[in-house]
Length: 101
Image (cartoon, rainbow, N blue to C red; front, side, top):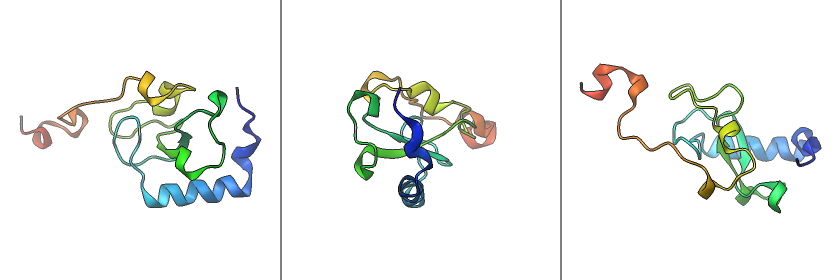
């Protein structure tokens, strides 16, 4: 497991705020409302800790408010190509009126 001291550094918090301000769409499920950022290429596998190109929005410990998925937990220290990402054409949590059913 990577050293987590970077998560409390001023530099990391500023970078996290900039990334979430630019977009809050989760890299795992595609829904908005992300409250965390995650390393696309995990630090445990040689990814850069503070490279903006290696960080992307993801739903943190609270999970996705739309699909309920714990995106960051599901991804773990794996690459995106190794994780089953949510692919759906209907937002089943929006209710029958939104789905046109």
